[in-house]
Image (cartoon, rainbow, N blue to C red; front, side, top):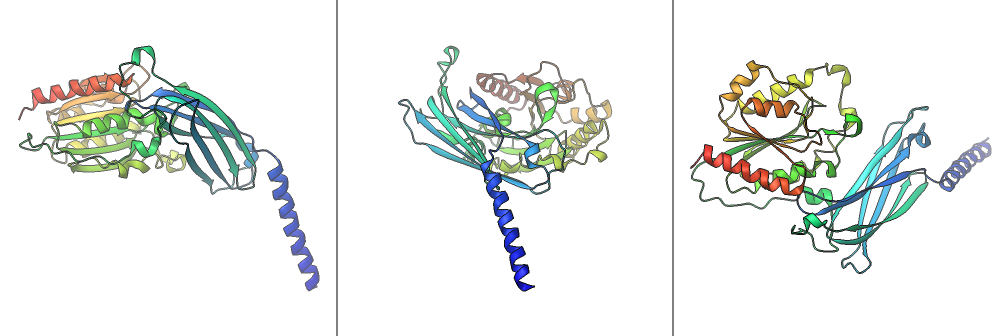
Length: 371
């Protein structure tokens, strides 16, 4: 009997090994497409790759994916190759019969030059897919006057650079507190007007604008609130302090996972109720700021807050602006709010728009709140 048990165990191990070998011999089905290169709002070229894997090949299993991307300068571009590694893990079994794709992306920032990216995706069964792509990062004719912030051939991880620590600035000319409250909407509209989960390259304008405001010589206390209309959730809250803690914000994108939303509890129209409650809690129940800035893409087109919410906000007397990174020209919840409060909206379409918007906003603050 004991021999039979040993034989059965050996058979199970051999069957498992045979299945693993059969799986490894089958390719992992995936497709890819390029991101960029495009000039971002901190004057670096952002490039990368998006990946899509049919979910059918994971039916009935939990799975893990390891992604390795090598970016290397080529054709005379100086610099060293850089390895970028990602791991993705799905802890629940994928239901049989479910359709669709597993999609994700990877982005990096480079200086001018020519580059080759080589990528490989492997799952925990040993199946893999791979590919390579060449691209060239160069300024267009209308951008020749732009001073790039990365050297030719320099390669950095976009997410790590996005949330790099802020240097502390002394502002001795400010004799008293000048506070600014910054609201960042993390919702992103994808194709067909659907809200999608943000990736670092989606929010480059948001955090480039935040960094410029954080480095402004005209403010010395900063409060930051990152939130999601879609999830009706505050993701990051920094109370007033002398610097913006960018490092603590690095996990804000990971917070926006589909399973964090309980759709059964989100009543239709409750996004505006959440927005009204957020504004009241942040602006009416603490020391009033001298300036308020909204950053991000506008959502809920045509929606307005009622007067009983707006009237107390008008009494604050702060300079209000909206730095709008939307691709659309019509006004949504944040744009309508700023207009109702007598503020100014700036559209961020090109990197040069950001510098002009910040300069105009600071000029309004100095006129309204001189020291």
